[in-house]
Length: 287
Picture (cartoon, rainbow, N blue to C red):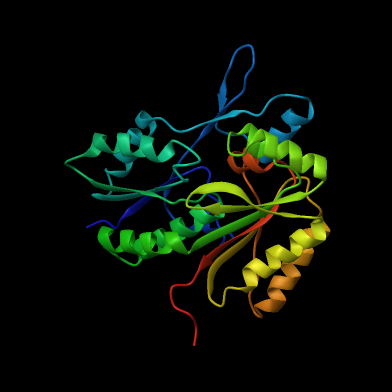
């Protein structure tokens, strides 16, 4: 019997360098619709291209989930090679992708088992779950066992972000515009968390140095880390990223942590110059 095939979406980012080049899985792309005279969608948008558009005054795009038909096509293609599919996607509170995946799964009903999991995460958090699933499937785990491993990891995903402004989160409908305006007036630096699948303000910091210290403090509370990624924007300060990386590598000798430029879906909520970390805690602490 063929091993379990994993399906995910294009918000995924991986903590392991080169992971996508060495493992087989399917990525169903989200699209980005701009409010132009002739609205069009793009599935190839990069974070850099998004901010180039913003820099000339264009509004943020609408992030468009894949359609049920796209998922049906992806599942149908995979069902030619396997009878077990696990579909893991960006948080259902950030996108309709999970709902569309569930709707599309009916296309292969009766000839292929499909499990759909809401990651309650995005970007590297989603990537950590996909890595866990793909590696388990390659080792011959059953669909039930792969699902168990992924579901066990979901509550062990954590992420925090430091942003210069709440305006992007407010524009995406995930923060109170009045709260965003007040933060601007007071010149405070918002600190965000990903909690139960939603990005929300957690606390305020007075400056970037304090924010960096909070990121480091957040991570070093974990004694057992399976995956960790440092997430940066396209216009962040390299010295900040380097400081966080060096401090974390000193705290966890022998381990190096990847630095990823977050994708456009997350960028529409964080803006161009956020800095954050995603942690996937290990299930068993080392002795």
